[in-house]
Length: 264
Ligand code: 5GP
Image (cartoon, rainbow, N blue to C red; front, side, top):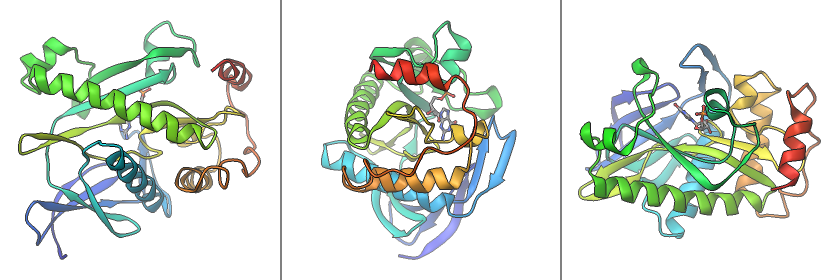
């Protein structure tokens, strides 16, 4: 397969055309950003850790009946995907309260959300990704009611599968963001699922294992990404139980997180 011209470049990934009809190449770059691009860095190997985890999760979801855009890996940071017409929705599923819902609503961090809470935002950086509801999604013609029902059901199925996958490695899936696209009449999971788009806590220590380490300068971001990539992609019992000691450094409200998490 030959990589052709750049089709699109985002904050952490670039998408290229190829010489194969209906297939694109997604390159996971080493760029990392937070707070609407207000904090930016380039961290060696970050792209390959996220690509590895995304590929592993896409394969796992496909095996369990979820249609994804994943085709194959070309090298550690370049993924071949089915070309989709992306739907500009950020579908977020939350199992525990953290991040923006703690800032915007009266939830205590770590509160268990059962059933999980699905929130859908309009993917539009200039508008700061405002939250949508079903009526707005249909009125804006972003998705039909039938597509929306399908997207929500698929998001909850993905959540159940990921909760199970992570639990086997003593990782609590707090929340994650996914995006969908149309390929013909079928809706596929697109984009990525990685440490940039999931919020993950060590079930035992409460330690952050995701982009919050970067957002809130909680420790060595790449050491965390590398360690989490090993834990997610290796067999349970191998990477899951034999962990490096928790990183040093203060973690706000760690004791309350730990207490809450013991109840899960
Ligand atoms: P929050 O709304 O709490 O900031 O984010 C909820 C979850 O969705 C977190 O796991 C976060 O990483 C993910 N998320 C929200 N917005 C974005 C985004 O624009 N890009 C990525 N990669 N992940 C996001």
